[in-house]
Image 1 (cartoon, rainbow, N blue to C red):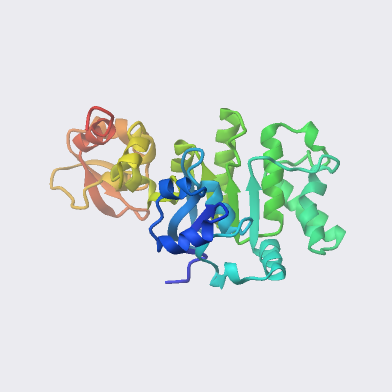
Image 2 (image 1 turned 120 degrees about the vertical axis):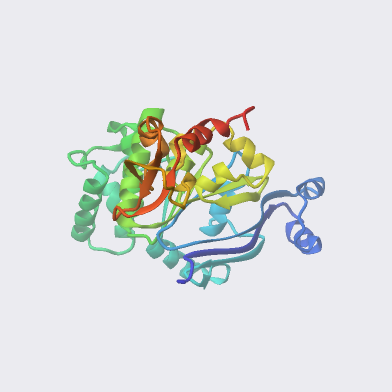
Length: 343
């Protein structure tokens, strides 16, 4: 198996004058209340995980859960108090300033909630700016920026100034600017949370389209569970600096590891999240009808068809081979069985 792009081993971030001493004395067993009583705030508490090449890990939690702090530690915008962080095998915490700047310029792209566009520069100039900082010739940087304009669907607006754009368009410029340097690793901290719901949905769809095309390694921060379910390959749910569960969206909904995660998921419309393969029976029944559905279909899209069947339905893979079956009763149980007061 290839080496993970991002690897965190027992990462801690504790704010306060006595942070390092207290962490040492705690011997890995950090109690947030004890630390708080001693004037320290625990931002990240013993985070260990890996992110594979091309994977999108969505980190979510309520305000103050530590999700943005974790991202800032991994991009080294803030220094972790303890633990190890590796980026493509390099020990991030041992890099000197020059090495860190090189890593950020050549490997990392970052998009934040505030668009941070330069108001006196056009869309094209904003996107070309990080390339020019890298020393790329003006003509080459403008050509590259124009490619990015097309990629995020802003053709015809390349000479607009930020004030002439909507919030969603400004966010697209921010995304294009961070992609212009062709980062391998992309950090996004609540990039869509300032947008109204309709534009936010459009941006999520656009983001999924870009990721399918570009296959970046992504850490995406959000406090919106629906957004996490829509975008993630895996989700990490944080509370009080601790990663409560890190798993696939389906497992987080079907098998919550803690009471906190269960509460997060109890109102989720499962049929919008789960795929047929998440709930199918891998054995094929002898009582199979004529209908076939793909294992990759979202349940909501095929539920009505399945529920009209009296017989069990065959489930197929991308090559149309039968890989399992699903009974109409299973659909009813999945959609209604996990809801609140009805477990």
